[in-house]
Image (cartoon, rainbow, N blue to C red; front, side):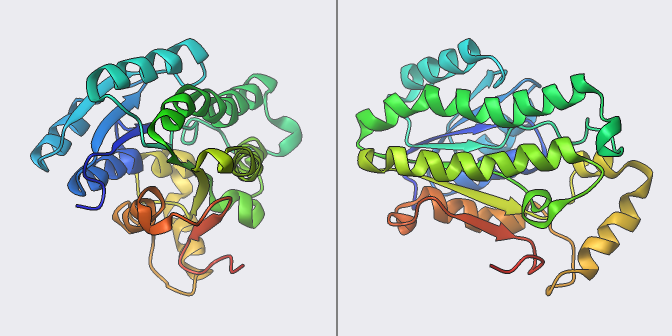
Length: 252
């Protein structure tokens, strides 16, 4: 049980990869704070079925007051915060279009949730991590940023910003023994990906698979090991890094 005694906050935990992260972390002994603007009942059921403890909270990461309240409730329930998985993001809701035709409101929404949301959640939990003597923040970026995905420039740009935030935060927080890393997945087989590519999902996934060294599509369980590594003490001297989990599409 690599995470026994640790409390991990997971944003965007109601479904998809966020839910998988919560279950995988609980399986390794972590207490989970499952956060989402949507209902987390299914996540709670899965975490509890895995033998884990979980606190489900309705949290809007775009709202600083909401994330601050989350941190307070997490401390009240579990007494500490050791890790944060910044997974919440606008993804399937963003439409494909040429960059000059993206509505300004949609551009702003992507930046508010995907970039400001990470800033808000991180600000909320860092004081508790300092109190605990350290911690680990894992930001979820995307192959869109490392590869340069066209026709959804708002999404691509927001996820590229996450990589810059990760590096800057890692340098600021290293003195507090708080590590900050990012994970860049390829398109994962989730409901969000179905919505993201809409009627072209099969064609898109085939194209992504064809560009990989490992030629199958990514599933949520494929990300669990990387997440566990980054929040556990196994990665205690790793910070400021972006780990691609994309089957060998982008090789650094």
